Image (cartoon, rainbow over all chains, first blue to last red; front, side, top):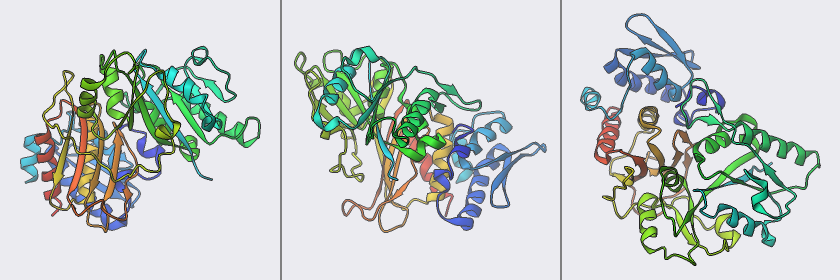
Length: 91
Length: 313
């Protein structure tokens, strides 16, 4: 997803509905994926998210649409949901 | 105020777009239509709402190729709307945008969905792709245009039989309606204002094994278990980042636990806001998702979505 999608669209399609509870659950689930790449995500006041690696670098992302491009930059490699290694880590 | 519907007419070079549009504009039902084309001269008729644009794209800094804003189109649509409001041009109730034969439809879809002023006043009603029954599907661009279309118009059927081509088109895009024309003759009602079209009609490809030379294929996945919407959103956004340029179209009905299904519809990186429908089309409550993509392994996609969904429990 390109960087501006989340800014141009009022609410990202993947974050429609559910309120704060869904937002909290989203952070938990995303962290299960990001952990495989040495990254983590935290909610920042219910408005944006902060993405961090284990060396102290961080980035602010507006929604789950812009998250993955930033995560790839921080991880320094592509993040592929079809990667069998990731899927076994999730299981 | 209701948004003005926009129909995109795409199709490869020489596939009959201009003939189709010229004939449509001559139809009495098409009077209140604004038309945006690339070449004014080729349409060959006077039309008071005919506009021309250059293919000027604005590549966003952090963006991918398909997430480009068509600045020319955005300017033209904004101008049409403000001049209509000021009474400088006649009112119009629909816009037809003709692309060049080599144009990628994705940036136009993105512009309509994302440009702040445009998305407030206009909405994409559908994508029509013309396919030359004689020339067939020759280039990668024409395959992509077919893959993202809602309606396929087979042109020049007076000179070539379309039998074999039609089955190839169905394999590439099983959800699209297919009409045949000769000399661009077609009823506007087949392409515009299509109230009879049920949004729940998510066609499952009959031929799942067909692999086109280009690697583009349509396949559908069915899921017995209820899908967690949060997990699905995480999964699809990640897939679009990783494989977005190869995932040409995704459409589906998802069972996320509500009374009716959630309608999902995306063209490359642009996913329309999901719509909660009141009821399922039949007794089958399984989620069904049709993917049209290049070099995507259906089993790998299924395994991945199931793993993300299981992680939500």
